[in-house]
Image 1 (cartoon, each protein chain N blue to C red):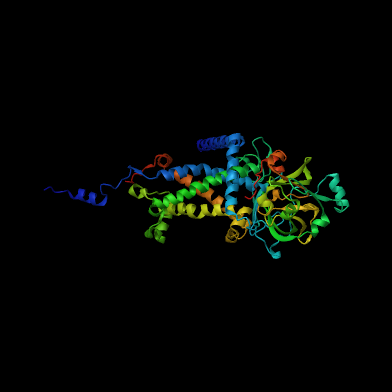
Image 2: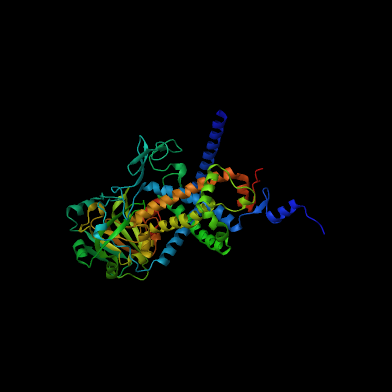
Length: 287
Length: 254
């Protein structure tokens, strides 16, 4: 009969033989998540850039069913030979050099809303942008629905993304917000699971922004209006749907910016590797 | 500090360079024949799926008078330049005739007066321009299907082409729709708008309303309606002026 040293006893109980520690390589992203991630990395950029070109054809947004040049636009991007501006309600923000007044790659002054480097195609081409947009819309919707279905079936959503009860406590959320603001990220075993802010962002994109952007996109289609007239009621009219489509696109862009910043801050090589091979090295615990 | 700025600048210029490469790459892909055929398959898929979910009798939403746009802007041409059209304007379309021909058993030539006496449909609908704006107006006119039934479509007729009086750089405007849209109950040739006779800016004497599609399909200044078997024989083969000249999608239900 052997007698264990008390330290060993503690370690076995608390960490357990299967519990990974900081520095360990853990399997983090399933193949379905990795494929969908990289497909979307392409798809979402094509959709955003071709969408900005489509916006350039009529750079004004309205609420309600109708809206054209003489109607009140809650957002407008415009410009002339002197300046560019973004008008938000009664607020006018000068955007000379960026929006509404910019120089193209040939050095010529352009007064379209979004500059050539942000649009697809790079030169004004509404028909071309629509072709890109509607082709890649299929690539967003088709694989997106499969990913939804697959992630419910393999319990990715229920197990990894659904918040646990204790995570929803205001104090917990507040602490997570403070840690993020101080750029203090979880280490060791705690880094294995998504924290509440990550869960909220991913669930928000998956179940709010993506459905919103797809349905508002369909609401702009006169054909779909006849097939599913409830779309118009849901969003309060075609021009409201167009505004919401734009807002949702900007929120997705904001998500991507924050996502990329977090990847850089959390260690880009480890993060990118985990999205390619699925394996993620848990950050070492601070001594 | 200096070092940091130069590094930041270097990263920025690298980023801009990569972005530029990506962009010009995308533009080049966009112009390639193979990719254009992928895009046109996606368009076929979109049209096929829409036709699958849109019931043949499903109507575009009709609004009440209170929902109408206070001002309905014009688009495309707002005054055809041809001498023939100018002469029709002077004579208030007294000698104007709408020709219905092509693959029909009884070609028609109808005066405006005659067309206005035919059964009419009035509908307050939303006009959606491909650019993104919308305007709601009231349209009154004869259902296209009545004219096609009157002329007697031959079985080989698959598309209806609209030849117009306005032109872009000397090319008269033209558009086409298939029989699903041609026989849709809301597809009318409008001679009235907002309870008045159609104004020149909106397509007098007659314009097409095809409510399940975008604005460029709604041909203005319609002079002749032709039934054809295939779009290959129309214009440069894509079925419409903007389709042929600028690559706009023939199916504009989205």
